[in-house]
Length: 146
Image (tube, rainbow, N blue to C red; front, side):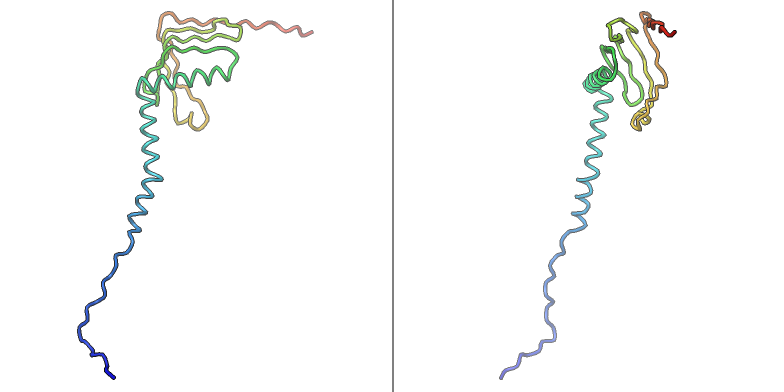
């Protein structure tokens, strides 16, 4: 029987490329972690620095405050860099009976945003900037304790 002839130089078998696992891991990391963070930052910047975003924040702020208190808060306009300060225009605060407690054309507010994200509200300054600001005192009826 015939035996195969041994060859001294046989070409190596072609190697198939390995799957690009590293490239897939980087894409997954970008898609799951980095992209949502970037989108969140873009939304935050739009809400904090544009008139459109300021109006959305004003509506949310007024509705949340009015849902949590007995009385009514009205804010005509909200402007500023909402990451650190805001200017409120045409501010009116009334009690539950509709009696005006506070009114101002403009109020400048400086606050700590990071503390608010932790659940603590820290207002650094609150200053009425108009000459037509007024604060009325509410009278509390005396108790009939005997």
